[in-house]
Amino acid sequence: MLAHQDVVLSSDHAATKLRRLIYDHIAAQGWRAVDMGPASEERCDYPEQGAAAARLVAANQFRFGIVLCGTGQGIMMAANKITGIRCGVCSDPYSARLIRQHNDANMLALGARVIGEGLALEIVDAFLSATFEGGRHEPRVRMLDALDLSRQ
Ligand code: RB5
Image (cartoon, rainbow, N blue to C red; front, side):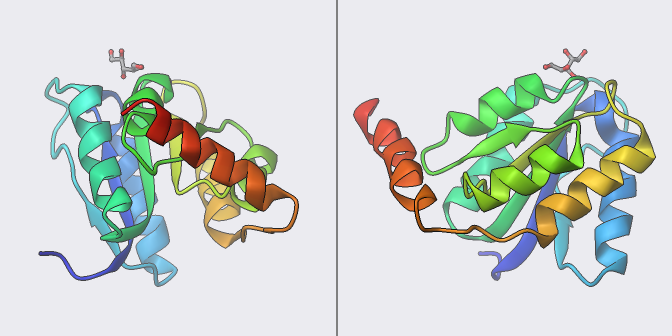
């Protein structure tokens, strides 16, 4: 069993390079991160890669997950199928900050074919540095969690 870590990263083949860049970026900041691959750009499936990372976040093995595919959309959909996951695709730092502050997102999805490297790192920084505000947002997040339960 993994010890409690901070961030798990996962992607499909479309985002191997950007995922590695993000790993190096956050590791340099002191985040404890684990990279679930893939190691190469050989084809793999975003549903499996997204769900694998999401299961670890849902099991509290990691505080946050960052997942990537070509658009970010497919791997976000996979992550959100796992109970307890709140994952948003972001192409701007404002949204990345707000999905933490208002939605208590525990995963961030990025599209490696949509955004450039510099912007991706800004988005990651915005996501990881923001804090859930609670208050009026708390019952809404609980309502999201209740939707998880209603589909079981
Ligand atoms: C792979 O070609 C591509 O479909 C995938 O990376 C992603 O964009 C799907 O949502």
